[in-house]
Amino acid sequence: MKLVGDSFWNWENKWFSLLPWLVVCFVFVFIVMRVIGYGYIPSDDAMRHVGKAISGKPWSEILVLRPDAPGDHNPGWHAILRALHLWLGFVC
Image 1 (cartoon, one colour):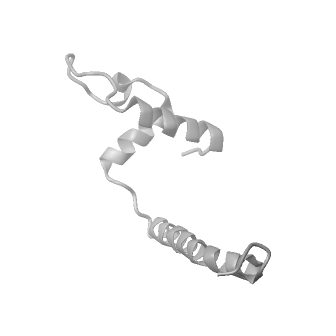
Image 2 (tube, one colour; image 1 turned 90 degrees about the vertical axis):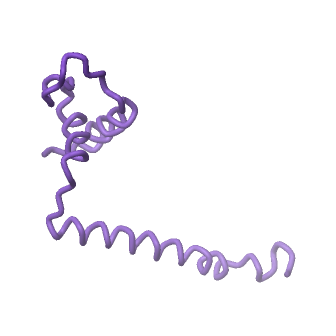
Image 3 (cartoon, helix red, strand yellow; image 1 turned 90 degrees about the horizontal axis):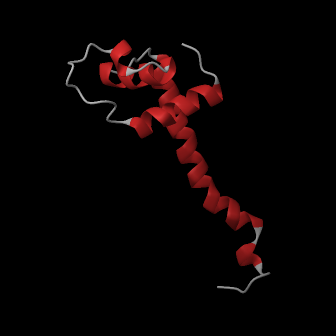
């Protein structure tokens, strides 16, 4: 191993160590796009979370609930989805 300033720290080694991560990211995005391209729609559980985040309505207006049903049991997840929806401006 050579010291700093020698060929060990040159740009080629940096690119060769970064290249596998770029390939992994590209393959991941490619797979996601292929699945979306097939028209996959997640099951009702995922749709429930997205519906809550996009609509901004309380659960009583989205689902039929028992009077003794607890409130939102995933408030953090719904807040993250809502923030992403507002930030990215996706419209369904």
